[in-house]
Structures are given as C-alpha cells and as structure tokens.
Length: 235
Image 1 (cartoon, rainbow, N blue to C red):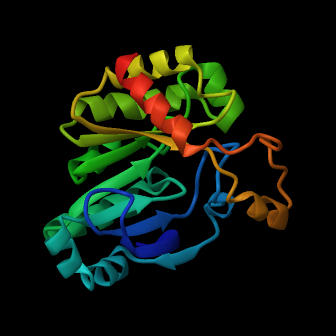
Image 2 (image 1 turned 45 degrees about the vertical axis):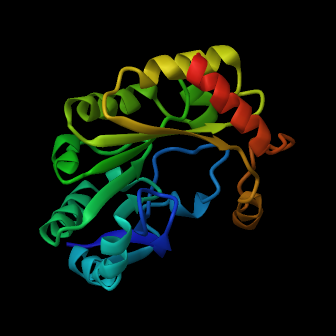
Image 3 (image 1 turned 30 degrees about the vertical axis):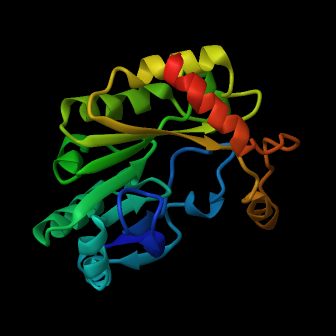
C-alpha cells in the first residue's frame, strides 16, 4: 500500500502538543479562498510512500516526542482523502506508542469511525458556520463536514478547534455566536484557536496561474484577533 504526501515537517511546534512529526498529505476536496498551499490540492501529485517508510522516518525523532509530549500529526491537504493509507499509518504509530493527531476540515471519503479509533487528537478546521458560507468561501458542502462531525462527537477523541478569521467574512459578532454554538455541540474540546487571515501564499497562486479570490482583503492583525478571542469567550 502506498499513499501520496506533499511534504514533512520533522520538528513541528504548532500542530498538536509537544514536538511533532507533521505529515502533509496530498489531496484536498476544498478550494478555500485563503488556502496558502494550493499545491496540495491535486491528489495525483506529491510523493508516493508506504506507511512503513513513513513510520521509519518518524521514529528517528521519537526521543523528541518522548521528552516533549509530542508525536505524529497527519495534516494536508486533508488526510481523510486517503483513508486506507491513513488508517494503516495511524495503526503503526499506535503500535509504537506514538501520540497521534489528525488535522482536518472533515472532508474525506468516509471510514471515519475506524480512523478515529487510532487518533488521540483531532484538530478540526471549521471553515464557516452555515451552508452559504461553506459554498462561497471554500467551495464545499457543509453536510460533508457534518458527517465527520457526527462521528467525531461519538468518539472519545480530544479536540482542538481552529477557525480562520477573514475580515468582512468570518469576523462578525453574529458569526462568532454561531461558531460558539457549533463548538458547544462537541465534548472534549481542549482548545479553540482563532487564526488571522494572511496573504503569505498568494505568490503560489500567481505561479500556478490560479485566480486569488480574496484579492484586496488585508491580513487580519493579531491584536484584533486577541480582542476577538476575548469576545469569543463571552459570546
């Protein structure tokens, strides 16, 4: 069995607790207007690798995981688009005592219950709060997100929530209230992160000849994000 990966970050600090071996899976169903890695979209690109090969690369850093409380994070793209490969890799990680996390928007091909059996932490990227927002901002159907969310609610997997704040689109008071209501449906939520919209990936769109749909929208400053997080606690 082989899967396709885009890249690996060997000593990641942002995608889960401790020091992480972050595997960026190739392929994504969504077309987020603010995506900074459009080169991960095409499932047929990237590098082929077996779960065993990937595990051996990860085990080189096990002493870092053990000392920091870290582990493996499967990100993307979206790892849910390669379910059989993902399950096999997660199983191998658990057999070797590694903490596992998946970083996903919840858009995959099913088999979610099996995936979550071998997952210690889910980092869920909530793109929007309603059908119209999902369609316009990320070209996705919110019902697909809900299918994964339902299986996630049934599991005992710990959860981090992430949400990108785009000026004029996902930064309003009513939007935040709806986001809070959505998050309250989940148990085991350990952390909620509001991520500021940025334009660091725009040059990739130019290189790939893809129109950038948020042209003209300025990055969200971190000071405003902090104020929003303060408001978020109270909404």
